[in-house]
Length: 99
Image 1 (tube, rainbow, N blue to C red):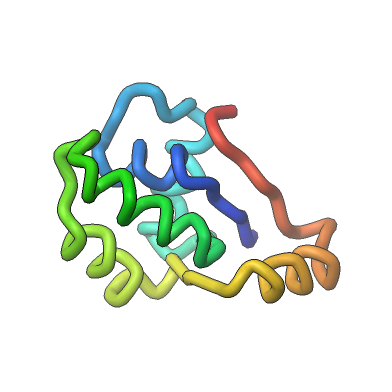
Image 2: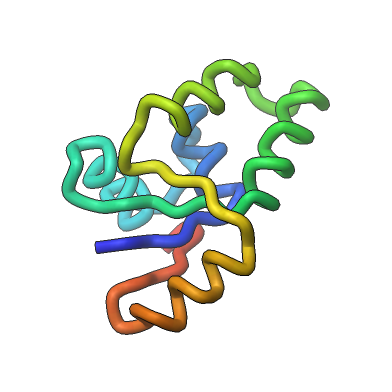
C-alpha cells in the first residue's frame, strides 16, 4: 500500500517521538520492512530541513536525507506528482498524520 506522510508524522517517526500515533507508527514500520511505500511531498522534505535547522528535534540533515536515499520505500516527490499519483490510485493511497 502507498501512503502520503506529512511533516509531523515523518519527523516524529525519525525522532522516535511518542506523539506519533499507533497506526501511523505501524505504517512507518511496515515501510521499513518493505511492505508499504511512504511518499513525502518535496514541501515535507523542505519543512523537515527547516525544523532541523531550528534545532527543534534531535535530528540532523544527514539522518533525514539518508532515510530518503537508502530507504527504498521512502520516496520524495514534487507535490504535483503526489496529487497525480493520489488521483490515479486514490483507493490505494492514504494520507495520515497521527491516527
